[in-house]
Length: 147
Image 1: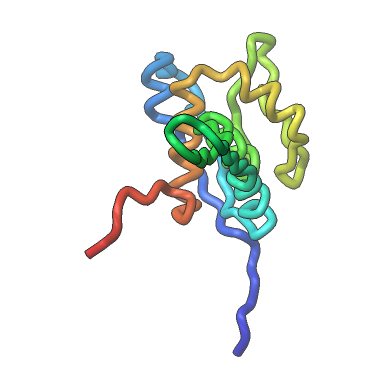
Image 2: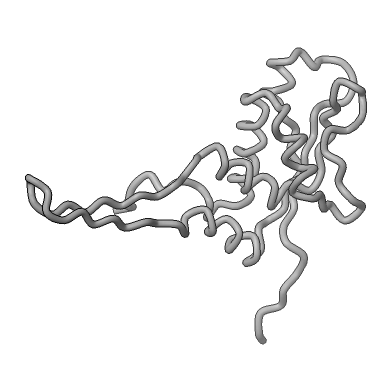
């Protein structure tokens, strides 16, 4: 029987570290839902790594030099990975309205996502990103080869 594609995996998380850090003891905890990335998401993420510039300098005192330049920001990678896979979040802004305004099918424009993401404390953004990596294990950093 051939592969049958089901809806991407989704997982709900409670941001326990952030709730503890910001003393959220009463009421509803901070929750997010993360979905598994699709091929489209992988390609969007991979675009961050696609710009490599090769410079060759000739006739220098030390001889020819080759320099490789790659523009990369780990914080941008975190934002992109979360934007591609975050489906819901109950964090509210200073006006007591939801910070991330997802549509009924869990979508948000990149501009609206960026506006919400930009005001998050770094610790909260990191915890959300950690949840994204738990669902999308192939995005986890490779720390070395397995024996």
